[in-house]
Length: 193
Ligand code: ADP
Image (cartoon, rainbow, N blue to C red; front, side, top):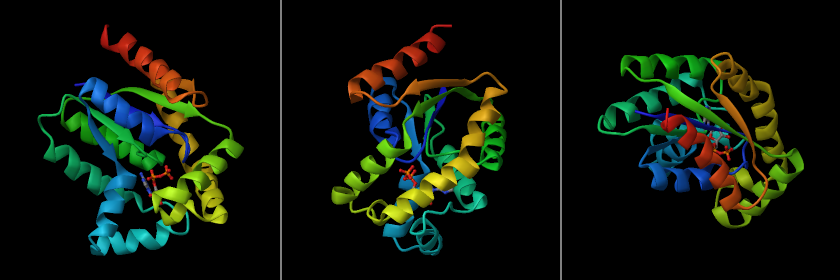
């Protein structure tokens, strides 16, 4: 099994690159943002609680997202590997993920971190808001709040995995194809070991 974390701030292109990576490597895509939006669409109690936090640009509690990931891992015992997108977003989530993977005799192979400047992120998110129907993408104050949450709680996730030498930083600006080929070459290097 080869498991990847696609890491980076909101708007860094994780969703776009995830689609291409899962197609190329046959991985199972686990996006906590998508899982939460599906709960919201189904109006579940979890979705209703999550929506009010997401609409303010805040993170959802660790227990909620860890629970969703734990169930998703159990639902796909046949997976060749998982691509985590938007998760883990706190050190507590990283520690919980490591434990869950260990129970399945596997681990994170690499953390691919997309670096994008803050002004480019805001521009991309507001632009996505014009068509995505995502309420957290239409308001600049919410977009900026998400970036602040990222800086305060999520950048430390990269430091956590640096300790295990698992992080590779890549430029997240350029064409979709350029970025994709950079990601693929990092994955291929590790798959050929
Ligand atoms: P983006 O990274 O573009 O902001 P996501 O779809 O990954 O979009 O996440 C949207 C929102 O869902 C986040 O702003 C946050 O409120 C919530 N969320 C997603 N993943 C997590 C997570 N791992 N922990 C806590 N909250 C999360």
